[in-house]
Image (cartoon, rainbow, N blue to C red; front, side):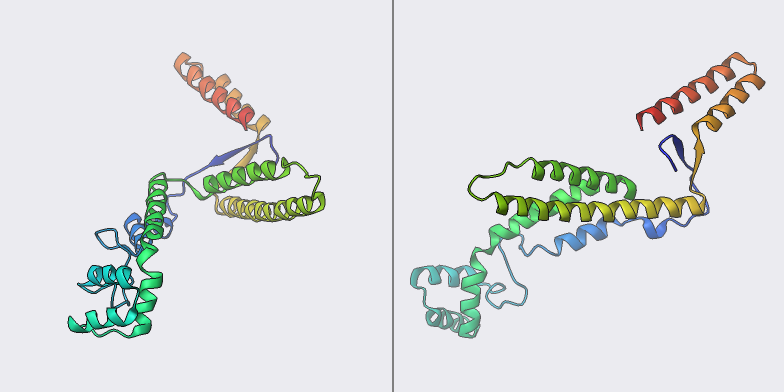
Length: 230
């Protein structure tokens, strides 16, 4: 296929599309399951005894006051919740300050869900990815060379360029594969510009009605304009 060919997509009513339609609710459920925040916006680990304790806040406040795991264990034991010292230390070290990271994750999930409301085909997404890679290629290679470490910077630029080119090659290969499969199935076919114009010119010669000729001319002009834009 060359650049002067038209690409025409023909919907195939016999094609089963159910396997290709994503369930927005399922996607949302999966993404939100990756965020460990309770309804109050506080981090919790489902397998952590203290995270799920009704006196969690009390235990954490006492920790900030004394920083002694043994005293926290006594507090929990007095309230009928015996917890091992190592679990207390693990919670106090890794779970107390985790909330802000989970909030960032939640914001990221919300952005993904917002983007997911815009329905794009696979080829559209590939084009966006290719445009992003091209932008990064320009950005990387516009970085100037430092007098202090020219070899290091050039090496870094070369490595990043190779990685970006590798990603681009994979996307181009995927795009070619998808278009090849569409063509094999009859969902996509190509026709040369000259043959395409001949079809419309023949129609114009055979149908003399003013409205018909006007409609055919309008459609032909639109397709010609689209081909020039491509």
